[in-house]
Every structure is written in C-alpha cells, then in structure tokens.
Image (cartoon, rainbow, N blue to C red):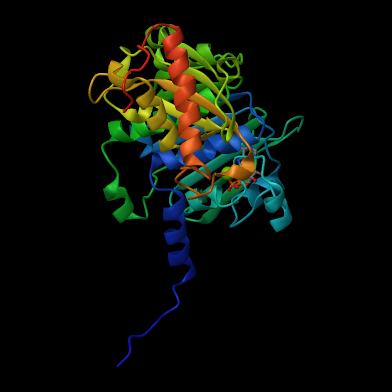
Length: 347
Ligand code: ADP
Ligand code: MG
C-alpha cells in the first residue's frame, strides 16, 4: 500500500519558507539592515532585547514608504528592486531583491513597520502577526522606516527552542551589524543590546574610525593598512585588495573578527579569511586569529555571491588565485611594518 501524499496547507508552507529566511535573530537583523541600506539610509540604529529573541528594532532615515507601499512590502514575493528575470541577469545592485524578508519575518513574529516617505506628509503604521495583517493606520513618525520584531518564532516552538543563549544570539547580531557598519563607513550605524550601546559609528566615511568604533581604539590604532594598488599585486582574478589588518599580537580566539567584502558587499569568504591568517605565518600564536577588514574588487563574472542566498558564503572561479593575491597583499603590508619576518613559513 502506498503512502498518502498530501499538499501542505498554505500556512504550513509559509512557516517552512519563513524558517529558511529567518533562522535566528541575526538573520532577521541582516535582512532589515540590508533593507535600510538599500533605502539609501545615512543612519541605521539597531537594538535588540534579550538577544533579539524578545525584540529587534531597526530604525533608518531612508526613503521610507507610503501606505500603499508598506501594505505591499509585507506581502509574499514583493520587491521594488527588480521587475523581472532580465533585471536579475543584468546584475543586481541592491543588497536585496528576493522580496521575501518582510513577509517571512511577519509570518513568524509580531512585526510592526512604521514609516514615512521622504518629503511625505503622513506616516503609516502597519502590524502583522503570524502572517496576518492586524492593523494599518496613520502614525506620527519621522521620515524613514522603523521595523520592530517582537516575539520571534512565537508560533514556531521548535525553532525557538533551537536558539542559543540570549548573550550568544546578541553576539551573532553584533557581528552582522558590525559587518554592515564596516562595509559602509559613510552610514552611521548604532548597535544597542538591552538598552546598552555596544557601538556607534560616526558615518563620516573613514574606515579606520569605523573600525575604532566597533573594535575599540586599542585594536584600531595598531592596525596596518593593506593597499593592493601600492603593493603591486601578482596577476590574478582580483582587481584590488585593500583594508586593515591587525598587529600579530592583537588577536582573539575566534575567526569571526575577520570581515570580508566583495565589491562592497559584506560576505563570508572563508578562502580569503584563511589567506589572511596564513599571511601572518608563525607570528600568530596557535588558535589565535587577527582582526581584519578586507575589501576585494573583482569582476562580478568571476564570483558567485549566491552560492546560498542566506548563508552569504561566496565562491570564486579562481579561488587559488584569490588566496594568492590576498596572501601577498597582507604579507607585504605586514612585512613593510616589520611585523612578520620575510620567508616565515605559511600555514
Ligand atoms: P527585498 O529587500 O528583497 O526587496 P523585502 O521583503 O526585504 O524584499 O522588502 C520588500 C520591499 O519593502 C523592498 O523592496 C522595499 O521596497 C520595501 N522596504 C523594506 N524595508 C524598507 C526600508 N527600511 N525602507 C524603505 N523601504 C523598505
Ligand atoms: Mg530585503
């Protein structure tokens, strides 16, 4: 006897889909901050309660939305960023384009969007709970958008159980917000957890000041500049490598203080991270990792930023070439400052 095959009801499908977009508070924060950046914000303020499990708030001074737009924004597969597959093929300049984040977050939380278009005369507040629009109405608010997420996964107990301690979730959120703060030093980014400010960048466009804001003066002031243009990169897939890397004695026990950016986009690139670590050779104590902020310029055709839409890991066509160029650039920067010895064994 064969098993009965059923079609899942739309609510179940929605929950499953939402769980793929939003894994934990940090993934919701990632989506919301990307939306703020795409909305041309010059200030983005992120705050979380209890690691984001109880509450997340992302406020921006971006272009905002009128009532019709915000109603549309929380629906399924709705976006203002692309129109069709041709736009997709032509290359997407925005961080988002899938049109699923707000809908997904709204399906697994109580979501409140308060927004007013730039130059508009009225604001709107829209509340979604468990995927249903609860209310829409006028609101007094500044231009820009505030998104609040309360009780994430209240209706997905299995997912809620899998969350780590609030302090761990808050650290994940902080890492994400840090990445975007460093990607765009000309955006003023603030991060607050349980009412306490963890960092705040000035938004004046200077990378070292942004690094100072997120990692502190001590780390930032000992960082060495990497400038691929000056360093005469070997031939390879990269058009440029730049950024800041730490003094070999300024390290942490985690790899997560190495942030990588491809064509300005904050991404995970383990090959790049490994090349950075290898460049320090034996100057790095065992199980210690440097701070690094590494920007790569690369022909978009030679990199796949969508290996997994949510995981952020990128893949390069010529990964060996990327490793070599990054390693070279970082090594030269450290050598020039006398921080490593030449010929130090790699790896
Ligand atoms: P996507 O970012 O892929 O377009 P989202 O679900 O994240 O999909 O957002 C849907 C739409 O809502 C966006 O395309 C944008 O038009 C609008 N939107 C979302 N967040 C903001 C924001 N912070 N400011 C202005 N518009 C926003
Ligand atoms: Mg988005």
